[in-house]
Image (cartoon, rainbow, N blue to C red; front, side):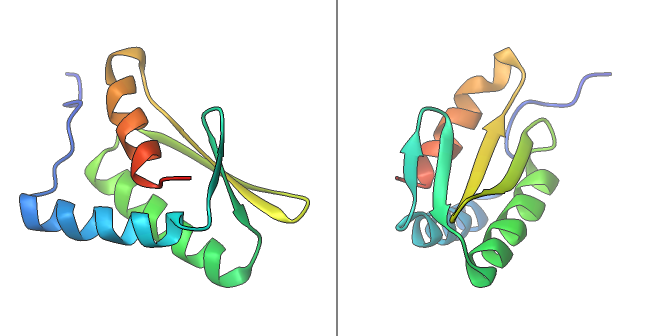
Length: 95
């Protein structure tokens, strides 16, 4: 049985999550499908929290977080049929 390719958050939960993503995303720079943030323990912790939360409500998304020089690089991937959801999430970060 296939997992649903939709977010399981309710309206208020989704609004709160998007606000949190936008807040951390203020410092992001988007390079293609990657989001790059200034490296730092506090930023890494916030991103790890968001990744964990998003992984619960959207289990079909795949996240990557790595350090590259003085940046944290976040990737968000999805199966082809769910790419619009991944793209919306990347957009939510701004950058």
